[in-house]
Image 1 (cartoon, rainbow, N blue to C red):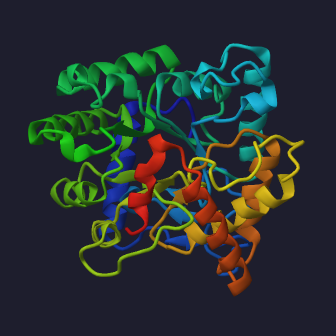
Image 2: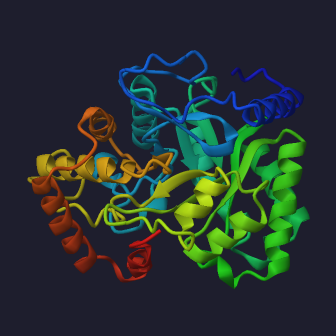
Length: 367
């Protein structure tokens, strides 16, 4: 894909993809690292033989099995400035910050990672700047949550449409690959009409070529399941928590069953339980640097044992962290008993040390 493609061409491409899926001609679900089954990789964006790629549900896109989450928590350990002020307090126009984001994105591209998820205005602006002229390397996921359904005044479809248009204009984007509206974390709190308004806005975005594909993010497991069942056309992709302690419910009551039945792409957020998995502070000089890297790889491998997950999307703050998650892709997928025990102990410690405002993650033990 090129930055020069038009919205009309995206609408046409979407129609072609739908026909291919209906005809059973869609790309195979998984292309493993090294491509041992010799599948056609010519249409995989930014293909790297050392990366695994998974089909993003009914979108038909083949996405790297680990992707770049938008958050840059703990980035102060790399560039300074925002210690004890919250990660969004980082001075995003500083040369150190922009250099860090460029280095991380560059290394993601080098490693074959081909999706970045931006969920707020600050992230959209930062990543659109770093990716200018390189949209042919990475799919761009867009959410401007400050002016989306989390806030009452932005829940009508016309206001959501305004958000997308104004956000793309500010970021210099002619289109987004995925518009995934950020709902209330407990999305069941939305009135039915508010969900309908969001679905109408997603329809409009895709039909007008502003967004190639659409979806939502939410932290309410059962409500996500019911939304997928009611709005399968609009919910092509969902973003939900999925930690290194999440387990699959294999009967029809589980979210997993609805995702499989309706062929929904699935990005997993918080694979490291908001960094509670780790002992150190993510800095290169941390005394637990090697141990934490090993735990990160165990977590990625654990999450990817669920074939329905397209990709976990951890926030990455250093070139080393990019290299580390890419290394996990090439390691043996299933954890041996010793690794299972190590990860279980680490997650028990993570749950015990979880910040109060993240206790809701415990609700994602089963999907």
